Amino acid sequence: MAEVLLSHPLDRVALLRINRPEAKNALNAEVRRQLAEHMITLGADASVRVIVITGNHEAFAAGADIKDMAAVGAIELMQRNNHLLWRTIAQCPKPVIAAVQGYAWGGGCELAMHADIIVAGENASFSQPEVKVGIMPGAGGTQRLVRAVGKYRAMFLAMTGQAFSGAEAGQMGLASLVIPDAEVLDKALDIAKTISRMPPLAIAQIKEVLLAGQDASLDTALMLERKAFQLLFASWDQKEGMAAFLEKRKPAYEGV
Image 1 (cartoon, helix red, strand yellow):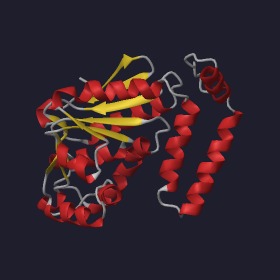
Image 2 (image 1 turned 30 degrees about the horizontal axis):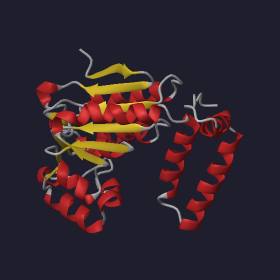
Image 3 (image 1 turned 30 degrees about the vertical axis):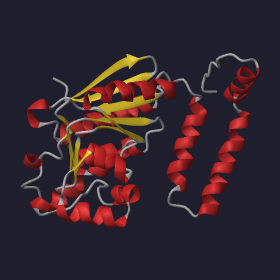
Image 4 (image 1 turned 180 degrees about the horizontal axis):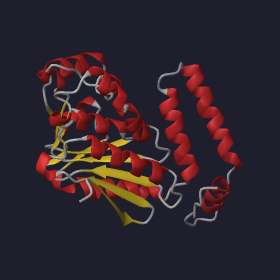
């Protein structure tokens, strides 16, 4: 059975579901490989405009599979090049939404932070507990976390390994939206449906400029924004969107 299941629950929306319930969806090498393959394929598929990643009600992903790591050496770990697999998610040109219920610990928390939008259940459980087994986060759990919640919270969470709820994730700025657990996937798909109806070129530019600009100076980031804004006036979708607004009808965006 595939360890990552692909479905298309809505037009132009792809859903990736991690499927290792016996291991609380722990991220072994095969899960990471399958996720990367799907992200590459979906990122290049013009019929897909939004990607949702989820697990099940018990676990989004309860971390890396310790059995897969315990005896490995530093050189072997380096040669696995896992960062290249993670990069397919972070650099996907399509919007990525993480629908998080249950455990999002270690690599699961890092996986959620690779998404562009995080929809979390109130009782979801986030954590970077790597320090408790003698290591540290290694897939963005320090760098993405500090950018999301600030230095002092990130230091505390990474050094103590303390878990925090979905509600707390929302309060500290890690989650985009926090809702009752049973509604998480439906809400994530509803957001995906809304985004899928937006002009794809504008969505792609918004994502690219937001990510590129966050580590640039304000002047440089504003220049990137300005150039992307100007570029979109060369698109058919811009003409369609503004014509539809003036004509009081719904636009039909084609991504050109």
